[in-house]
Length: 529
Image (cartoon, rainbow, N blue to C red):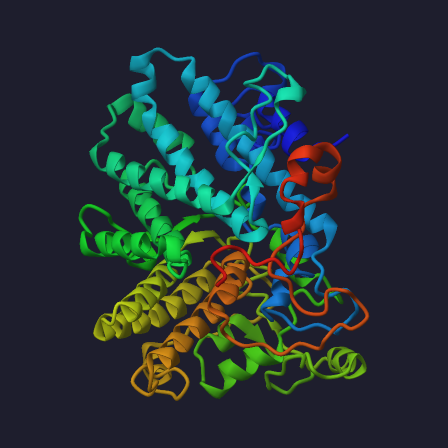
């Protein structure tokens, strides 16, 4: 029997069987189901690994969750229209929900283990707690952006409460309060990371256990501040957050030495794949994105047309023409009839996401924060504060970084039987920046310039960062999409949020009832003004 935020917290007692089930981990760590104790170091790695299916491109995330929800809602893909297409599937929603609360339980267990140590031992291992909190908050803000209010401050406490279910039912915290807590903590962590030092023993231990940033404190500082920028920018249009957002973003961007962020692709925060025979690999990307006949990787007309008309240098790196399209890029038109949409696909005319670069690239990294995203955040902030020169520089840098990011991941590919696309050149990037619809100087107003930024976010995120893509499209209401109205279903257009899983209604009833009025697909997240 599943109990979402109650039963799932018991996973913390096992210290992450999923986190340690693969050979790469079992060789290093004892089976957590067969030991009575763990350590901060081992629990830390189990915690980091417990959400890898939502960092590295994995089968269930792409096939079960994203294929029929987010990738449709922002037209990352094209598909034959069908009734119910705007209702996120319950299986996919439950997958995300259950994984998050298992992940949170791992973090609570890490807190519990750390708290049992003597003060001097806690101090030596402080870096594990700080960086784990950053990583937790990255996933937590995604959950808030999907659902709104979620159980947080009281969630994952079953182990701490010695298995007492009666006192472990977690309340739902408001999304505003969760964002406030996370922003407060991340600001403190950013400052503390500047002053932290590790002795040689703990440095080696941190490098061994940290497979995100390989024990690099500079990388964790960049991650922390880049995450702050993302979250501050997301709430920048909310009246109660506006002053704080602009002030803290100015502080971060004006003090690079104190608050470094990701500035180049060499500094991207991502999980790199070094050996596909370990559990750190992207083997699930192929079946998740490109399962034959399921429209998971088929191009939509909107994205293909935007990229084709502007000679986007990413187009041949990201997409393959349909096998019978004679080299022409064609996407599915969401306003065509289902018959026309299906026939276009059956005739082999629809472009697909490039298998060499993406789905069959088993070395595709798990993208967390990258340089192009940070530059686009900077561009929006500078535009908002009337620093047009700074906005232009950041915008054009973002495009350069995005193109070269996809060049770099394409170069990692081990795909066979598919011709590798040619990498985009600097000359192509320069030409692209001058095209109408891309050129900064040809956008007459600030609103037009913001539309350019929004368009580049959509193109850069595509199916690689779909959760960020949907959040930014909702927040900015750009780009604009046209969908067929689903008059055969109560949800006639794309939703603004996901519904809570049914098990919350059943097993966390009293706390769910307090937020049930908000549990509608039409309820906007607080930053979606």
